[in-house]
Image 1 (tube, rainbow, N blue to C red):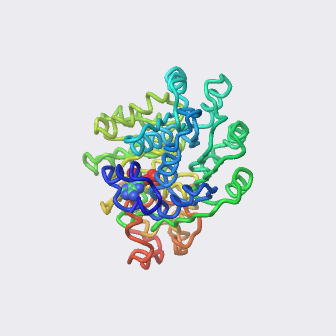
Image 2: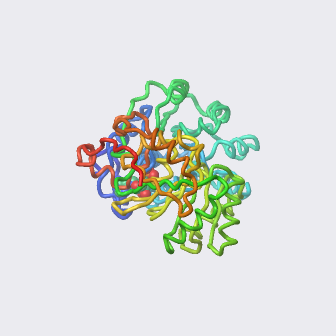
Image 3: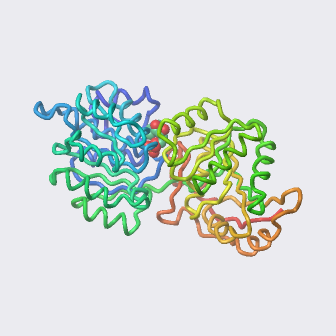
Length: 427
Ligand code: AMP
């Protein structure tokens, strides 16, 4: 029960209406700690319920109103991407709906005017990407002097994206005497040193995702030469009827080209990447969620933070640069027990990456030969190299986007025992 974690009835009573009956493990561990006022260093991935783990106790703290500080920002949440900012803002707004706590999102790609106005009217919690927050700091449209609690969400991703200098600038503007909560999917050396610099004696909270990739996902690899991928993608989409599909590309230009090619072929397609304006990104995402477009082409960073409940098909037009990102991408299919399919287009150059992916996912990779037999050289290389990997759950820090109900399954379910890695097999 949420009320047993120390949350007031004002906050706890709202949760069943959002479908939250019982706390997730990260919530059970983190909420009492955060309420007690100490710093926290938490390893938790998206899908574990981490937003509520820091969001609910932050709202709780805001309820204790200090008249002088009324609606001056006392809570700050820093996130790596605009999409995540919008998502965290929406979640906290829903949690705070029956209170007078105000939550404001600050991120780039949209005009400053609305944000300046919201800050001027007053807010209790700011959810921000670091760059745009610094713009507001420079214009003196935001005052961070009263911030009591800071959350760094997806800290590992912020470091990957080169936000360390920006984080330092923002943190220098905050009171030293504050509570700091650091959430990260992995606790790399860089994250640990970030924590050492910005937190004080943090209590460590560690939640292992119940599984790396949902067991209901099948993984297909289509061997195809790099210059034949667009035809292969069109063929795969035809094979899957009208299934909504998320297509991942490595680069923004690549995503644009794939989007144009699909549109030329008459497929209703949206494209989302970091060079698109925030409005264009939001529109593409809304169109996809509403079913107005069938295919959404995305880069990894743009796709991060997108909350799409369940997709039947994810296509990797390009494999990601690191095997862990495959897990993030594929985590969007096979959720909540639904069957899911991940199809990757791989050329000969991808053999090494496939080996890494084969080690991370539990299910075997299924190799498919295109009708014209193209790409057979990939088969030769990958089959020779994809070998059984270690128990993925034993890989500390291997990121995974678990199913939404992962926590209900607990660490000792049958899946946990079925985690011997099956070798890639060929057809
Ligand atoms: P997060 O890891 O914060 O992105 O949360 C993943 C999803 O789980 C979101 O859609 C949340 O609304 C949902 N969620 C979080 N906590 C709970 C809970 N205790 N019960 C049910 N759903 C939850």
